[in-house]
Length: 173
Image 1 (cartoon, rainbow, N blue to C red):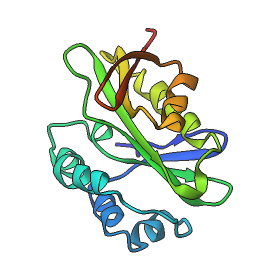
Image 2: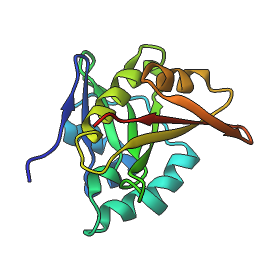
Image 3: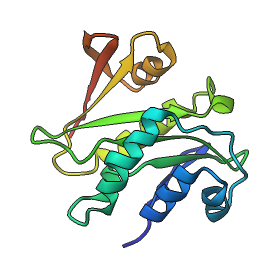
Image 4: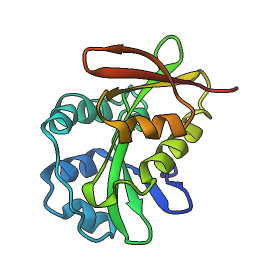
């Protein structure tokens, strides 16, 4: 199978393999070395660490699943040749054809439109899969930068719960 790589004007998006996810988690520069990029200033939140260990890595290791919908996609900012953030779908589309997206931008790359561009590329790529009808997301209510990414990508607010705002984008087929 040909490796998947998405490219936009400023970015490359690469789906990480199982061994690359393990290097990502080690956060010791080995992933950057393998990808041929400069070391990035990145921290792994407790939430992401738990997701990697309990959901993402087991999902990628499962041969019955399409790993492209389970893995973390890393974002390379081409101008700097550094990792700028990452995003993922939370598994394959459900019975209604809906998939959830999550994302995070590394501190030095925030407020540059990078994640807006990356989410647009992922949605365009995902829309090519039969059966995918919509993408949803949830953001912290106070995280205006995160929900700005969704609004710019055509998501609509569908509700709120606790401290979260829920969003959805219907895909045109």
